[in-house]
Image (cartoon, chains in turn orange, brown):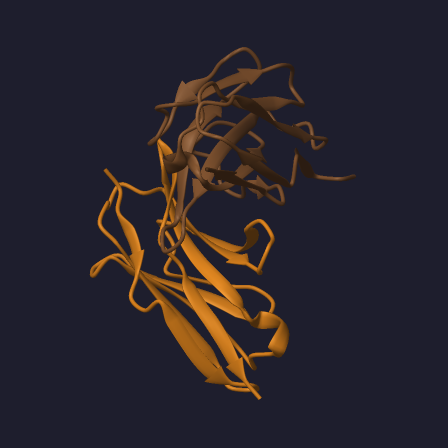
Length: 110
Length: 114
């Protein structure tokens, strides 16, 4: 089955810097990938998604890159703000639904 | 538009007790899901319902039952709670089947089984 995981459990960045959160996956059959943000005590919140036939997608201050050759995707957050502090999950989607990675905790240093 | 709501927010059970977690969505979504989230792990799918009247097992269904009461409501039942079921439970919904993206999540139910 699908295996989706993140490279680092914790990422610490300076406020105003760009953040890059990475994710590796094992199942090439995934149709799409999603990034979720989960703040403490809340449910996951959709950030951005990307179809498997794309290699880049941009949103407001966020960009997702997909490299199918090495089965890797990343979430880039521009000009990181205190409100970006959260756990970020990648999820891969296929016929069996979404499979979530373990999460990366993004910590913002003032 | 409340989105996905869950009750209760917190619950403590003793081993062997039973309870039902309630979930409702007001977005007219066809599909609904139950996940559990444990420390250091991602969300794991317990059961899902692709449409009203249908339910299917996910990755970790043992010890749980579900009921899709109508299009809006999807409940999760623990018949005989065990300490291994201590977790945070999330309900989610989406427009179509399990291969749909952008699942919307509720705030979670924090369950402790002693």
